[in-house]
Every structure is written in C-alpha cells, then in structure tokens.
Image (cartoon, rainbow, N blue to C red; front, side):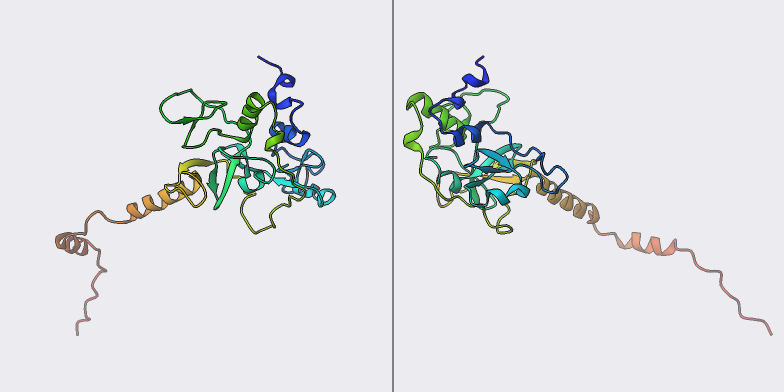
Length: 243
C-alpha cells in the first residue's frame, strides 16, 4: 500500500490549493476559537491554503474563500463554486436546498457491485448516466493518470466570495441526510440526486402514526352509547320533606 506522500493527490502536477483542498480535514474545532460558538472549520481559504472557522474570517476577507458543506458525513461544495475553479464535467452532482453540490472526495463503499450502468472511472461507484466520476478527487486522479496533469482543466479565478449570511442554508450540518432520486432531471443536468433529511421524514411518520392512533377505527354503535350512559353513577336522590 503506498504511503500518503506517494498518493496521486500529492503530485507535483497539482497546484497547492487543490492538493490541500482534497486532503484537508474539515469541520474540526478551531483551536484559536475553541471556546467560541460556530467554531467548526468549514471555510477553505484558497490563498492561504488552510481551513478556517467563521470567527477567523477577518484577516481573510479579501481572499478567495470556499464554503464547505457536509452531507452524509462527507464534505461537499457547491457546483457553481467548483466550476469557477476547474472543469467539473462528468462529475455527478446532487441537489440540496435547491442548489447543486458535488462531493470533494470519494466515499467508502461497503461492497463492490458491478452491474449494468455507469460507474466511476476511479473507484467503481455506481453512477447515473452520463456521469463518469463520483467526486472531484476521482476526476483529479483520473486526469493525473490519463492527462499527466490538470493544468488544462483549471480556470483562473481571482474572486470567490462566500454567500451572504442568511441568504441560503448551505452552511447547515445535517449528518442524517441521505441520497434519494429527485424524480426529475432538473433544468441543468441528467437525473441529479436530491439530499433529504431522514430526521424530517421521521417527524412526518410520527405525526401520521399519532393521527392514526387518535382516529377511532369505527364509530360506536347506539347500544354501546346507551350502555355507557346507563352505567354512569347518579347522585343520591333527595326526597321531598313529609308534612
């Protein structure tokens, strides 16, 4: 098994910002702001090649910044941001919060299954047509193997701001999210997959089950109603005084 330094992602053909992006561990607590709220390192500075938390933004305000999101315990970035940095053609996208995202790195698979259909050129994960890569790192690895570098697929990007605070829910961490087919191809791709929360689904199921429990299976009969009225206890009758 090759050592970490021998991994294709550490190739000299990769720019420093891309190499760090594909190997960085995001969402760890920031050591500088360990007592502050929202101290998870979910922002990547392309100019400094480091991950930072929202409390570290001030010195990096003029830098190119990439918002990292997390779904299904894996890091994703918005497709619009990724396409400003490099060619992301044939990387399978997913839909969450009405925005397309792609996974930064490949996800581990419990078992390998080769059936009919499309598969990732790097890790053999099953994909929808016409995609060829399940993540950004899988495409980079394929380019390093077949194109001897990624320079032809990188774009010059001098300005990459973060989305305005409160404008979108991209920063939400939802580890209970799962991948489900969206049921439509959408306006910009082929059969994207939507991310929905299992927690929300569970709440809906509980509400439905509670409604079923409160709803009687059949209306009571007339005899049952009259019997229940007869069984009610009455107060002791007060007799009229005798004169």
